[in-house]
Length: 378
Image (cartoon, rainbow, N blue to C red; front, side):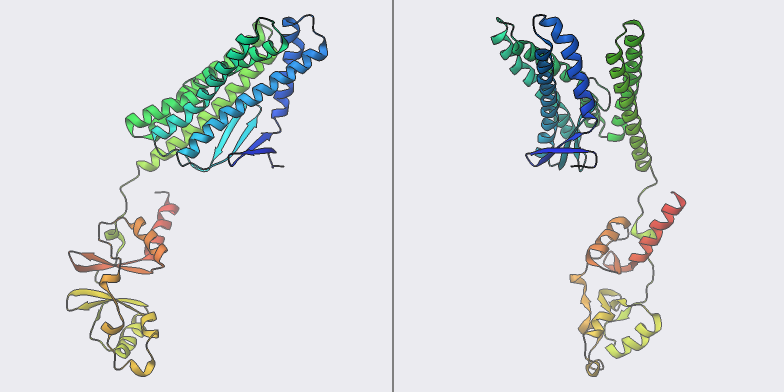
């Protein structure tokens, strides 16, 4: 059991979940075919047979949508995207993924997989229909419905509006052409918005002029769903574009401390404790040999030396040499340096420019700078 539905099986490592709302459409579809479609096609069949045919046809619709979503999932997994589950709900299905496609090519292949699977199913069902049409049995009628359903699913999903597969295909093409996913999403979202309004209007026409209540409600609901999805995608794209257009990245030079307190490498360890650790209350210091940066020394390095030996050892004996250090340059990206500090648990890093110590950058200073940016919404 799932909070939003029932987990019915697991296929290729992907959970198949039926949303509770699917029961509604399954019943309405079965009822529509059992009471209207099949009685007209087979007037000599009783009501029980029509209902059995309706259930079978609805089950094939279920299978067709499931295959559509599994095709999306299979290609997604092949392109390195983790698919957590496939969910079937009242308006169709959805493959739930842990990440988005990394480029337009991946988007194109994933989006096209679903309609391609339905076309393939439609062709297979067509062969069955042709082989049984001479007798026009209930199987022929059910399979004929499956052919129409799969072709309709394929072509409807290829409509070029977000969030339909056709909209994703168009977005993939534009993304590849412009190398700008946010801009491509904005375009297909607006197309999806127009198509959504058209579907809502078409649904109203069906209800008012053709007295087709069920079909009208269906188109209206699909239209509202598309409008909501396209609007959400447009907001996301706009936010991403705004973020992309923010001022240039922050460099190390903008945050680093210039002219830091440095220790000569010949200073005895005890003198380093008295004149630097107790005086400045820092736990790490850059080490110089005249003007040359040669390493860093820290409280941890001093702690590793027995107290009685500290008068006989110099900073150069306990420091971490420059060859073992990661030292960014002044023009490096501060966010990248911050991530490196987190990975290595470093509180500060020396900043090197043309072989000389240009300053030091503290992890807390980068974090504080980021907090200020967030607070001021820059």
